[in-house]
Image (cartoon, rainbow, N blue to C red; front, side, top):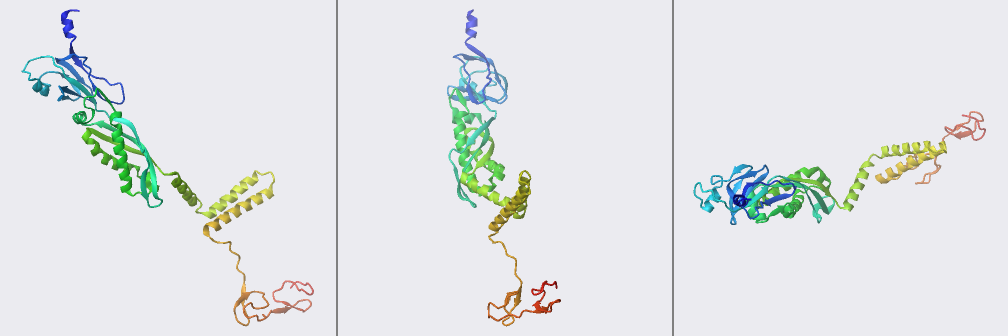
Length: 347
């Protein structure tokens, strides 16, 4: 190796970074103690931003594209180095590549239940989980406020901060929305948009942008879910007449499969009808109604008494029983009697 090759080996002429991971946000270019040549090629790919830092001071920022480093493309670095026009001197600088793509499918969840006052169930505790996505929107602010001089910075470095901000905002959203617990599932989109609008300004000073926020599920305590199941069952049994018919149909089906035959079918139908009637009476809070008995006025006090009674239960007066003559033996018999109690003849 000649001396010229050795000298060239101390200079960097190509600067680029390809990311094979899914969670790297910042990568510090490893110059291995070498100096950057004036005229070196800088390649910044889509979803990347390159930042040059000279002696701890932020210098030039390069958006996606291909650049030939020169005093024209590096105005801030040129001012810091006091280069004159056309002076192509090697220089040292820290080069950071910022990943500006969206980081997807990041999960969030409530580590502790969120308290909520519900109009149906009173004070309840809710748990929720979902996903969110974010990206670096301001690389300069992100460098200053978050990763500083780290050589490698991943999503885990900011994930905890973003999650806690999300959960805090979700608690406020649930408290202020006053949406009943039974209607939360129908308002996931509205709650998600509300939390997104609240969290986005809180993470913006860090150079981050919350792109999306999705609530996958809000779960209720077990005792509340049991109460909801009972209420659902009551709604299913709302039409008790149809329930009775269903019980009878099930009994007929079971009886048809029973080798005992007709007796089994009859008992099955009776049991189904009786069960349906019992449930209907229990739901309505009433007893089975007895058929109304015919009454007639008392001949003395005119109070209604049971038809056929010989004495009035109110005044004790004997009632007149209307009679007619038997067609065969002419004996007096009760009116409208079908047979004569004396001779047995049909009337």
